[in-house]
Amino acid sequence: MAQQPPVILITGGAQGIGKGIAAHFLDKGWRVVILDQNAEAISACRQDFSDPDNLLLITTDVSREPDVASAVEEAARWGQGLDALVNNAGIADPDTGPIEMLELDQWQRRIDVNLTGAFLLAKHAIPHLRQRRGSIVNIASTRALQSEPNSEAYAATKGALLALTHALAVSLGPDVRANSISPGWIDVTAWQADAPSEPQPLSATDHEQHPSGRVGKPEDVAAMVAYLVSPDARFVTGQNFVIDGGMTRKMIYEE
Image 1 (spheres, helix red, strand yellow):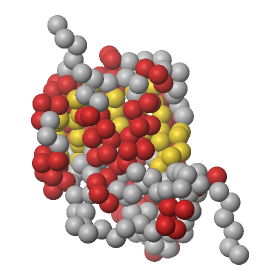
Image 2 (cartoon, helix red, strand yellow):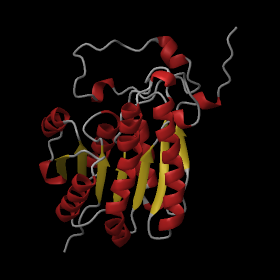
Image 3 (tube, helix red, strand yellow):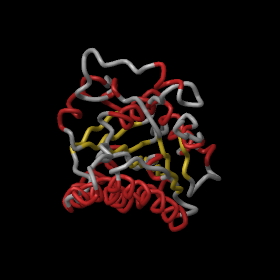
């Protein structure tokens, strides 16, 4: 009997970085499950990805445990197991205004989606991942390490994801590995469901300020995910990998 392709579940996978990761793994022959709350983006994926036998799309709010439990079980049945989980879903806008004006419901919603969602997916996926000696990758942000003003809620959730990652690694090893990726500036314009037909191009300055010489792409993050869930990374767990073109290593002073 032919061996079944490995199965990866990606939250927030219908657009942005998550969609780039999904495309990468479909190209590698994996079976891909995408969870996303955005029904319009889910619908667009049905048109953009032409491999229905290897793709399962589920509209899900990752902050709701009944929805998550149901989605994970559906994914595991469809894929006959799970090999990898990528917790990518998140409210992407980091600017919530001055903290003294930040409403509690805005703060809580970011925690519910960005952090609690990752916890819930891990909780319900772990039994399936254990069976396959699988892997978890949490998508954090360089904003877990450095900040702009008025980004307290977003930064707090991404910093907490780093701590959740190393806690999972210690609790779940050696059966399941857990790592995180902290992307910097990743241009996701072409990967958005509502992408403009004529997007504003990035400037030379946008690219040149990066020590790598360019702004990042979803493919850059996807390549690191692919390494982390592969057998080549069996000795790698509990780690955070910064993918930002070198920006967090660059001293910047106003002149």
